[in-house]
Every structure is written in structure tokens, then in C-alpha cells.
Image (cartoon, rainbow, N blue to C red):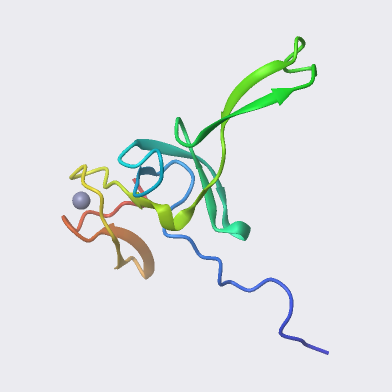
Amino acid sequence: MLTNKGPQPKNHMHVKKGDKVVVLSGKDKGQQGEIIEAIPKKMKVVVAGVNKVKRHMKPNQKYPNGGIITRESPLNVSKVMLVCPSCKKPTRIAKKLVNGKFVRACKKCGEVIDNK
Ligand SMILES: [Zn+2]
């Protein structure tokens, strides 16, 4: 019996790991960084160097002395905008059909962002 519950392909994000983005709001507004983690389930991304928070760590394998570390915490994906690798401007995504497949392209310069 099929139900409507379960994973839906709704959590589609306009950005993904490795993309360069600019932060649109919050304390890190205007900062740019690369996405180091994408969390589609929560519609969040972790951007290198952005939204850093201090965490108190208990000693563990990675941090044998424990203490305070700073690490990036996830941002809502709606707070970031993709920076086009070609024209270096923050841009919206256009979809382009290339070889029968939709790829992401820059709305400003038209350059394809995927399949580099
Ligand atoms: Zn562009």
C-alpha cells in the first residue's frame, strides 16, 4: 500500500557541496565561502569560514585536550546565494538543457556551472 509519507524529492537545493556562495543575511552577511557540507534534509548548508560558533569540547580522539574549538554551524540555504565561477557575481540559477540533461547555469552570464 502506497502512502504519501516518506522521503519526497522536495528538498532540492540550488546549491551543493563545493559551490562558492555569498551570505545574504545575518552576522556574516557579504562573506563568501565554499560549501563544505550540504544537508538537503534540513535545507541547510555549511559554508567554510561562515557562521562560526564556539563549542566546548570534551577531550576525544581528534581533540585530545578538549577545550574550546570554533566550527562552522549550518546556515539555512535561503540565506546564501551562489557565486558564479565564471563571472564571479552572485547569481540565480538558470536551468539549461545540455546533452539531454538539465544542468545549472548562471542567469547573468549564461555559463554552465555544473559539469566543469
Ligand atoms: Zn556568471
